[in-house]
Image (cartoon, rainbow, N blue to C red; front, side, top):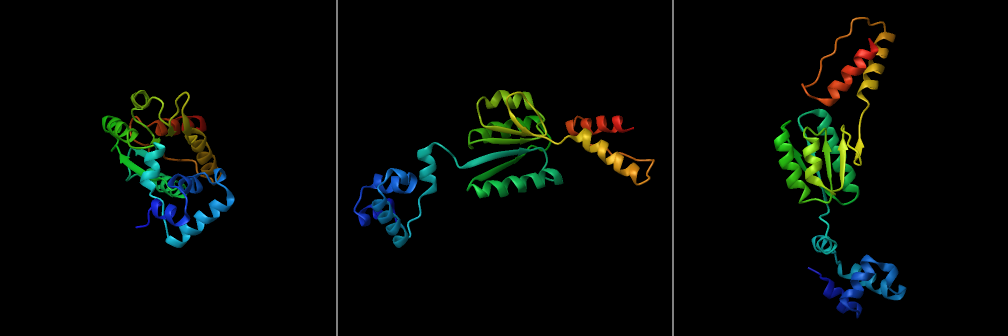
Length: 197
């Protein structure tokens, strides 16, 4: 395995110069940078990602906590998060709370210590989660809290639009099969349903 030391020796520069040439090229003379780049290519050097992350104090991963991976909504969301993270060479650690607020709290606690940030999908234990996380980078999905980034669906409006569409097709008797008791999204859908009827 080719090391940073090997590249430095071949290029006739210090290890710190090689490191700067790779991570902060603007701080290295162009001729030196080109020589280091040529040696890197010639030797096939690949930086050690774990070592780089260790030096930076980052993990290179994010956590994702969802209430139920068998739910197609959260399965699709998980795939989307993973696809986007891959574009940034970031790993995703996924936890399924199985709709259990205590399990969610445990997952949030564990993942917050192993990742650079967390995404919590439809949290069941939002106040306790926020208390645990402090200053952690956080995004909520289908939940809102002051001062926290969030992504939400306007379920009430979606329900109103769905009812309007069905009525425009001539339907007059429309049934709604609701979600689990205590589901915020189901409560919002029911609001839209009431407004639409």
